[in-house]
Length: 616
Image (cartoon, rainbow, N blue to C red; front, side, top):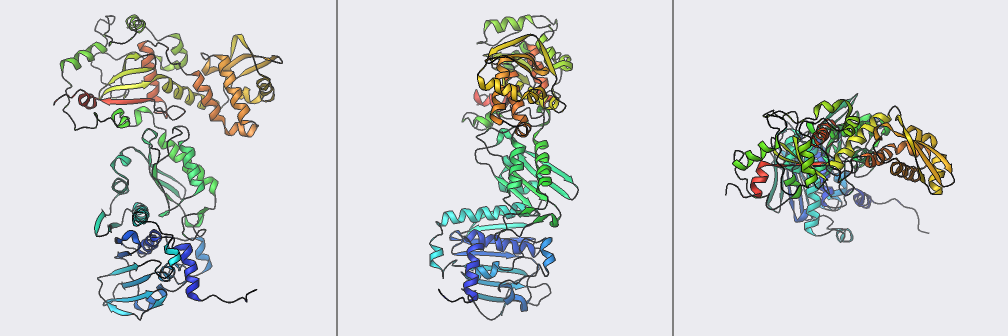
């Protein structure tokens, strides 16, 4: 067995570099964090060959005194902590005192700095851990750090680097994270002498648009919530615009982090509104007392540990959930043209022709006539039964079904009088039903397309969630609905009677293979009781256990809402369609169904003009 011995300082630094300096992007991150800790207001970055050949960061911060330049490149030397107690409330981005020493052990480093009030700058160079004497240099102020030929003296490490293009991509992402986190600081970034970013200091929203794009900023819900010493601000992209690979940026006290607690909280905030094949997208800044978060848990400082993770999880989840819970009346329309990405709709903007004869004729035909009972025009392709239904209900009241379903809102369902402004009704007013699946409505912007089942499913789901907070009331059935059940269904009904009661179901066992539905949740009296009961028994059997059922309550309610919603191919009268539109406008998360699918889209008049090549 070899004798135990002390490792030389250079080898210690190179081992530390393996943890801190994984690739050029890690070098860039450490240098940017040092610049920010020096209170820089402008930071200029120059990268060559993906950062393998060169990474240079120049800032206008406070600078480093001549006598401290050698210490800046020494192991475990820092100005940011002094006593063990400082680790309990770290307010700086860098604090370990090993980043520059680790970098200098595996690269050629030149450090030039001019402290405030100093007559001129000073320079020190280090190559593979060996330093030069401090010498005078020229620099207007602040600090310049140049790192060249990364891993030149550790060829085994250099072999693990990827192509220049790949390493540049990582550098670009590291820069974007830092620039996003600190919008009050100006940044520039050059790669191979080509300018990629020129970011002026400014508002957070401006920086979001500059880094993530105007579309990201325009399609996101704003968040600005505080509770005690914790605050959350930023944006979360609305579910309708979420992509399969969205940008996800979370900053804790100005530091980009990947934290499981926060990631889970954000997934939960999107759970009710995001389709399974899409990913949340957000840029969020969490600010809290440094004593409530430990950032000293990972060499690269990308992970944190919260003192009270449960409270932070709930705070973040609720804040984002509320921001995404806007009603249709409280959020921008979702453009069908943008969602489809159709080439025809993506061409240059054409002048609107709102006053054309055809547009006026269709608009007039869609509105009630002054007499109140005249025939209404219906577009070609609508089934004759639908046309007859439309003719029959011009002055009719809503059906009993919708009267029961919407209760106090039935007075809102009638179409407006001629010329009535629809500012309060962003979904407009119904024109017709298409193939028993979609509702076509007209608003001031153009055409609204509504998936009636998806929309009604969300409405019922939100009603069930509100009602379930106090226990869902049961509506007894006049005639119990009996059905032949599988043994597992019977066993589930007998074992989870209390859970079924809480959900508003009254089930009884009539035999080893027979169940009777004697009551259903009051909001779902029009649903098929047998189909509804089977679906809920299936979910209860899958979840199992009282605690699991409580945790999965919303999934159970979503199943109930799906089976309680108006089905496709059901013909609705115009007042019924308008009732649905008004209810959508008042329902939180009304833009998506329980599975995250969109419930409505907007085709503007400009979109329609482009489709038909008007004005060309």
